[in-house]
Length: 103
Image (cartoon, rainbow, N blue to C red; front, side, top):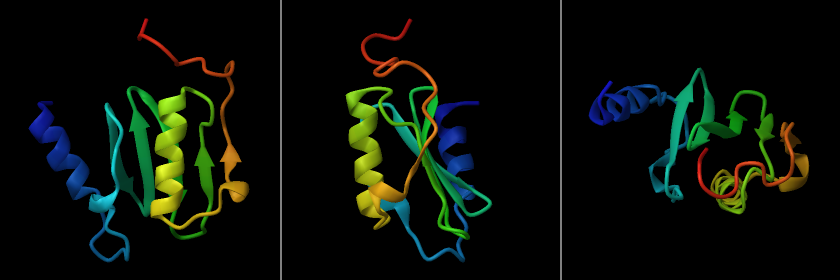
């Protein structure tokens, strides 16, 4: 898929009936947002770092992959007006395991 096709596909996944418009969310370098079945996802490089289910309010985040990922997560939490203390941390690697250059 070309980058244009990917962006078009991601845009088509955003439900028009949903009350959120994520176009105002500032994304860090190499991050993208998409929505499937009322769940917003943010991918940073190849890792999903944020998942927000708008139906039940559940928020899963992948804290401490990198400082940039954490900044993106905090930005998304603020954008969607979500409480950081109520997030579910799904990080299963070492702290800062994705910092630095990609291997």
